[in-house]
Length: 419
Image 1 (cartoon, rainbow, N blue to C red):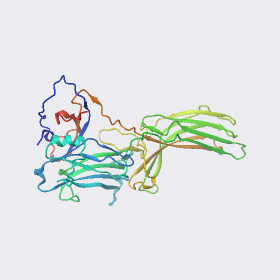
Image 2 (image 1 turned 60 degrees about the horizontal axis):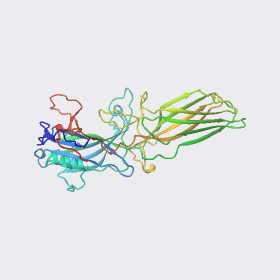
Image 3 (image 1 turned 90 degrees about the vertical axis):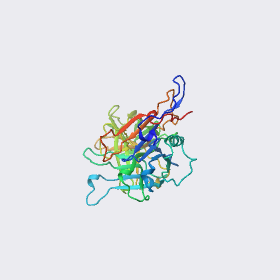
Image 4 (image 1 turned 90 degrees about the horizontal axis):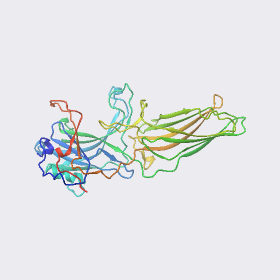
């Protein structure tokens, strides 16, 4: 078996002289093995982008031990796990989790012999790992839900509610065979969306309210400087109040609300405030007066520990934040096992006990920017990283950490993407 499979020694390839200036691309390879070490998967990424019209394929390489199979096959599956209730509430046979098999096929012996569509990373891994390396590709359906996690409460136990994805490969007689834990490897992946290159129209709204025995109206105009915001940006809310009534505006409040819709429930929609500001500066706004003001809001996860706030799908040893807005090609064709997230700014004017309130609402989009597809070029030939994930096994002699990161040149010498 190759040095990459065993990790016991460095590959003996000739090293380039130190004075040679080589430009190489920096990249990562994610590796995970089954508990018995007979199956090992390699992925170039764990985030697969939903482009609305298409979804990135899940492609990687499987390294197998043919002597262990003994006539059996290796099957691969992409599983979407949707949990819509707490584990601690699962009593008397109730189960609040659904597993959707979005893709399933035989990986070895390969039924798809077309190697022309392999990615560059697959070609290099297959070349390095040897004849027992098998490339695989799975396609995720276009309308599959995005990875979202609902924040659990402080006293909640078990897995949180939300949508998770797993890539699973196992040894069995058929794809319906019950997989054995020691001959199964599963790696958590995510289906994500990034912000479009161009935003929509600038959000703007005007609301008016008239009062009994009042000759005029109270007018509130609220505007955002743009429709598309990235995580970490401040949202500027421009407010213009024109008071033609005989009432007095005593206080102003602006808040960003996250809307969450759990599609499996007919009444599964709710809103949570993730940022707010309240001010009396410029107040009271007396009859006949006008006020223009800009309020800044910062939607972040800090100090938002309430149960039910939607978060981005989480991978181990990675921090998470507020979930991005969900973009749908057709809002009427949403997946019943999905969670739809939206954001809006709500501006509220307080007029006192008798005057009531005046409310304006502006929807906007909050997402992560699309990462730069151009990999950074560096003059060092050993910038690649191999991230290895531990598989729990009954015969492990000691508990290694949950992940180990080591230079890829110690495992795959000479595996580089050249430009």
